[in-house]
Length: 341
Length: 261
Image 1 (cartoon, helix red, strand yellow):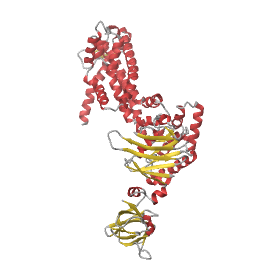
Image 2 (spheres, rainbow over the protein chains, first blue to last red; image 1 turned 90 degrees about the vertical axis):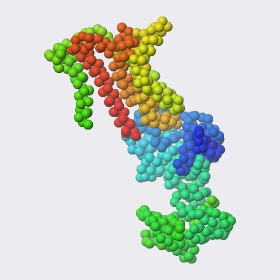
Image 3 (cartoon, each protein chain N blue to C red; image 1 turned 180 degrees about the horizontal axis):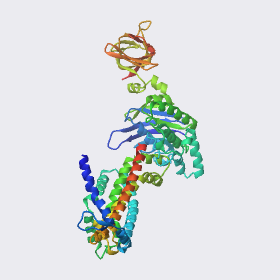
Image 4 (tube, rainbow over the protein chains, first blue to last red; image 1 turned 45 degrees about the vertical axis):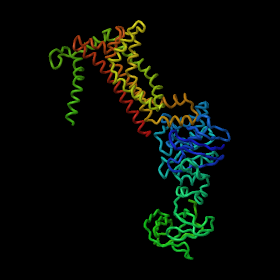
């Protein structure tokens, strides 16, 4: 089963906010994460697929079938809401069995299926507990079991981990990934946490102001972001304004940076991207792309140390495992990326 | 502050305490407290046909009022909650304020004008009395239900149910109605308490055969003091019972919501 959006546009009434001209496909068994800042339209995208809102134009397809005008209840989608939306007056088992009940599955069969689903998420001993007596992680598992128990065509996750604390979030990431792989179900995962998206997804879609700006694998997205904003949003980054000097160099405020041969014409204004872990401590053996300065911020994070090196009027943000004094850094030309402005 | 509170409580409870004392007093004329102790007033009350009948009428009116209020208020509150348009919101606020804006006396005069005509000759019937009680108490129940719907974030649960395959009927009966049981319970107890004690409308609208308890109670004050006190204590006990049940329902509801939040 797959999810597809074809030229979908939706605008909230009386505003300019919405999503515009979206083409996106989540293939069978794929986990696609949608990330973006607040208000970028990622949740709207989920609502369009779910059927909570209808597009002004374009089509929503589920496994090739046009479901644009089909009501939510008939779309057969498993949805995990940000707040889990568990029914507080029902036990965990009744919550999980509810989609089977509305499908008129016989009582004994739905009890068996609900018990199996709860077992799959490790909550068989909590079947009679009400949601408000369960922890956040347990509620999350019940919500997942409920969304999967009726064999949905696809799974939609609306920031499902945002209400959990950091430790539990990591555990639940693995849990969601495990279940998604086990069910081999097309999954759209909306999140504002880029680390969560990169670690879980097969592909990541980045949204900005209601438009898709890049859809790529986590590695591609990190290594070759399409725009300055994507680079800033995905991972940490040094982003400097520069001007192309020649076919293999660019001038930034604190000096000349050598790059690999590129296609930008000399004199063009450009954004220079260098990931902090690519900034090496100390001068280069050949002296190229080396800069001296003074550390103005130093953050010790255990295995990693993050520092801001003031060079001329700019800051070079670096990451290293070294603990000694830092007064110069260098950047290998292959780690200098150029992004059009 | 505590002095003012103390004075207020004394002011509030003194008449109630005196009613209790008076209902067991043998003789009470021109003295601070009655003399002698007796259960006679309660026995007399028990054997008084008009009071027993009035008590039954009151229970009938309360029961039917509660049923009608439930049947009307739940879908109406749901419609008000779902339709967030400005016009509907204004209309709902007017409905909520109706009991304050139009006191029972005004409603009663309206009923007399309309239902004493040959076209609608229903003045004095039990059903008109019940209709009056429904009109007076419905806004309180509506208010309790709408507030609870907003508090419970029902829309999110409805969306979840819908996404799981539930149609409108299933969403309403499986999710909305059970979720509202606490506010419905406490709201109905308020309806019952108001209906039990309602006098202004009942006194003008009720016929001789269907006089509820508070209307008959008024006559008791023209007789012996002890009898009047005993008759009032019965009404007071009913009201206290309703208030206590309401408090317990509200407490369990708030506990449930606190845990959920």
